[in-house]
Image: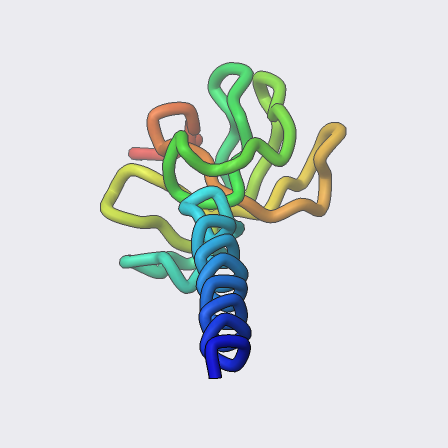
Length: 113
């Protein structure tokens, strides 16, 4: 009987460790696509106003997917909370990648005439 209880306890501990480790790996640094957007926009062209990280999610805690150099052309498709843009890179070393950039580091050419 004790052997059975010991095996059950060992199995329970291993299962907890396995699922606990899995839960720990699912951190905010996991990639987040456009599902995190709070506002969709008609695709518009913008440029990186300085060298900036392209991130896997809307925040500095997310993994950097690469650097966008100043004047890198992007197409913005949506944003989150008026502070992060989900975009597709159109020029430079990361061309074709999608990711997130803080709106503070994007420039838009708007004709006000």
